Amino acid sequence: MITVHVDLNVPWLPRERRFMALRDGCTVGEMLENLGIVGDRRDHLLAVVNGRSALAEDRLRDGDGIVVLPVLCGG
Image 1 (tube, one colour):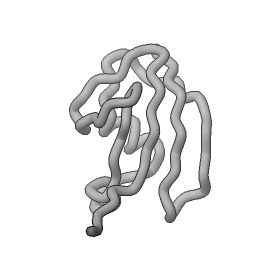
Image 2: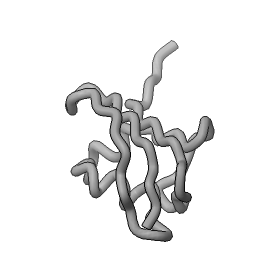
Image 3: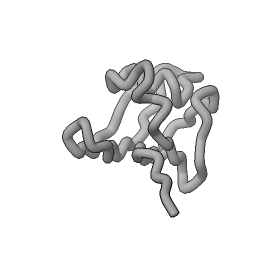
Image 4: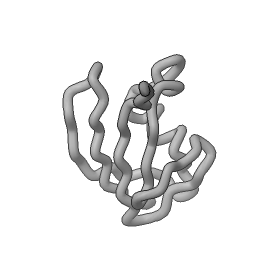
């Protein structure tokens, strides 16, 4: 098991900061599923792990800090 710190900051869910226990080898995408974020909504989010943009298939490590934000665009 690994433990990560998640800062969830998306408009359609309550703002939440918490620690999550996940299985070894868990990916960013699987973590989002555990948070109930699936389907089209996932396509409009940016996951930042330890200050770097992450892909759904990136594996998480014990102690990682994850911030989940909506993708912003504009000009």
